[in-house]
Each structure stands twice: as C-alpha cells, then as structure tokens.
Image 1 (spheres, chains in turn cyan, green):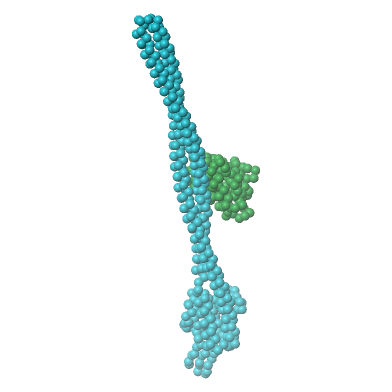
Image 2 (cartoon, rainbow over the protein chains, first blue to last red):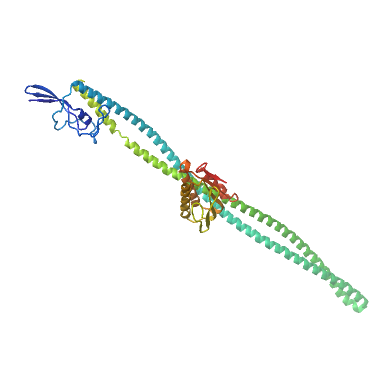
Length: 331
Length: 126
C-alpha cells in the first residue's frame, strides 16, 4: 500500500491547519481521497464562520513551510468545491487583514511625521531654555555691577558732603579773620590819632619836645604801614571768601547730581532685578515644556516600536500559501 | 480664621497673612523674601491655597505684593509654580488670581506682569 499526500502545511499557519489537508491514499483496492483535518481545541463561544478570522500563532514562524509530524486520520471528507469555497473565504479574510495593515502603515507614517514635529518642538524648547539661562546670567551680572556703582556713588556723595561741611567751616573762619582785621584797623587808626596828639604836645614843649616829636612821627609811620598791611590782608580775605563761596556752590551742585544718579541707579538695579525674576518665570515654563516634550518623544518611540513588520511578513506567508494551494489543487 | 483655614506665617523677614474678601481670599506678603530656599515656606502654602480653592470652589484669590520690598529668584519660581497648577485645571474649576503690585517698586513693575502670561485670562494684574 502506498500513500501519496498533498502538500502538508505548517504549524506556523494554524489558520490553514483548520481547513485541513487533502490526502490521496492508495490501498490495495484503489485510491481513496481523504480530507485530513487536525483536532483543534474546542472554543467556548466560537465566532460565526463567516465572521471569524483565522487565529495567528503565538510565535509564528516567518513563512518557512514544514511538514507535520504525524497527521491524524481525517475526520471528514470535503469536496473540491467546498475546499475552493474555503480557500476563497480565506482569501477574503486575507484581504481584510491587508486593508487593516495598510491603514496601520498609514498611521505609522503619520506618527513618524508627528514624532518629527515633537522633536522639532523639543529642540526649540531646549534652545529657549538655554537662551533664558544666558539672559538670567547676563541680567545677574548687570545687577551686581549696578550694585557696585551704587556703592561707589554712595562713597562719592559722602565725600562731597564732608567737603561741603569743611568748606563752610573755612568760610566761617575767614569771616572771623575779617572781624579781627577790623579791630586791628581800628587800633591802628587810634595809634595814628595818638601820634598826631603826641606831635602837638611835643611842639608845645619846644626844644625839649623835639625827641618826643621824632618818636611820634615814627609811630605815625608805623600806624600807616600797619593800616596798609591790614588793607592788603582784607583784600586777600575778601578774595578767599569769594573763592570759598564758589567752591561751596559747586560742591552743592555735585552732591545734588550724585544723589540723583544714585536714585537712577537704584531704579536700574530694580529693573534688572525685575528682569531676573521675569526670566526665572520663563525658565519655569520652559522647564515644564521640556519635560513634557521628552515624555511625548518617549511615548512616540514606544508606539512606533509596537507597530512592527511581523504582521506584514505573516500576511505575505499566508498569501504565498494560498497561491501555492490553488496551484496544487487547480482551484 | 480665613475660609481656607490656613494660618498666617511670620518667618525671617517675611510675613504672610491670609484674609477673607467679599469674593474670595487675599494673601498679603510683607517684608523681604531673600532666604536661600523660600520654597520651604511657599510651596506648602500655595499647595494648601490651590487645593482649598478647588475643593471649596472659591472663585478668586488676590496675591498682594505691595508690601514686599524684595523677592529673590527662588521666590518668584514658587509663585510661578503655583500659577502653573491653575493651568492644569479644567476650565470649570479654574479660579481667578489677581496680583496687586506696588508701582513705586521697580522690580515689581518689571517682573510681576509676566505672571499674567502663564494662564491668560485667569491671572490679572492690578
């Protein structure tokens, strides 16, 4: 007894195994056509034949055909027409799977584009974060510099105040000198008058008064010289007072300018501090955006890797098997 | 005690008081926030305010900075973090934040209006 078998199909394609294997068996009395159908586990609520898709194996082999080990005796015989109908149904289901995979491919392409956009946004967020970082550092440096300048202006203002006080003291002292000079001028004038009186007395004394006359004359000369010196000193003092007044005026002006600069500097420092704070707000926002885009990029990556090409390979394997079966059985 | 049941804070150079208003609650900041890590004080405070506002459906909170002379970077970060929590709420749960600032304090004029950009429409400056 000989045995010829049709093409036997793979563990890797249980959908096919459900349909069974056409076996031509030679016995001593002739040929018998058997349709071998392997046992499949009973399903509690099996889907309707027209709607259920063939189950795919848990670990499908990538399209390699292998012969089954020990085919069991066929449970029932199907006619070629029934087999052809089953093949047509399978082809229909393969068509549905193809369409679904085609849509999945389209989604994958769209995901890739979207993922690319997310990457682009992430790059920009990173850049904004770096720029705001740089801006914050620049603002901080400017703020520190303005504080240094403020400190310098404070020192200048204090020096000017001190100079102003000293100059005013100098002015008061010059006034005191003027008063002393007035007193001295008064004394000088009295000495002059006394010397004139002395001359008169010496003239009355006649010859014995001549020596006294000489002394009186000398005293008169001395008084005159003293008066001239006092006048000179008075002129210098007056000039000095004029200069001191001028200096006081200028110091007051400089002090006023320094004070207003100090106020402006305080305002600048305040503005810079405000910029630092505003930049900190920007950093807080870009920091959150940075984290979110990183999470999005990871999510897309997981999604992409879930869409593998294994389903496509399996489908191609199924199509090849159906074509081969059609050819073998001339369906 | 105020509607949210949150105690006032007085620490370092800063004083924070919470008082009820006709439409909600006001948080008044007085003094200086210049400590190294103000988030230790501010984060828990803002968390309580935020969760209380949502739970009790209080429509408005005023953040009054008029008495605040100085605020450092870490301090403004804590404020920004609180406001960004508002952004995460659904529209029907969002409350209003009104920021009262002192126009005579330059840093307030420069920086506080930036906070309104975080949640446009929900944060206003006055």
